[in-house]
Length: 154
Image 1: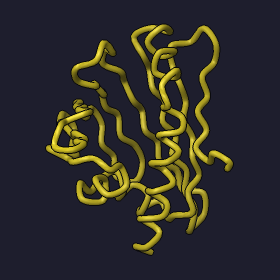
Image 2 (image 1 turned 180 degrees about the vertical axis):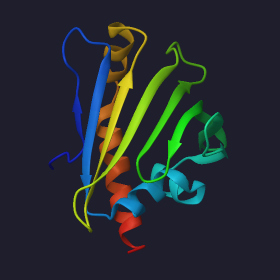
Image 3 (image 1 turned 60 degrees about the vertical axis):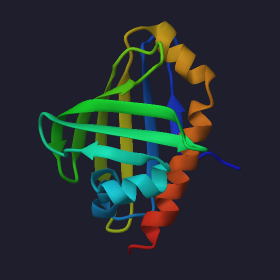
């Protein structure tokens, strides 16, 4: 099956660029990142906190059989509805340092939109470690769920 979310990692750079075109109006794509209940549904994680504003913060966690298996948090540095979110992202209880994420939302047509995520890592080594995990597969699965779930809101 084709992976619609593209992950581009150039050699010798400590960044990745993720792009995905959605069959969703821009406002609905942005809403999937803005509304905690909707975010929880497509990401399959529990939102503990989501302050969508400059200097706001967020936190979420994923549990399996009652045990927390993943927890992440960050600070929102820029939040412009239907345009962009700039935030830090930290995976708790891992050796990965904080990364910087630039999310850009773009209207393509009245019914389609594009998400670009530019992620900066502390080092090439940390970026490569993340790419050795099932990261590309996971983000594709999440974005496929986003498309399917948010499509019902049209």
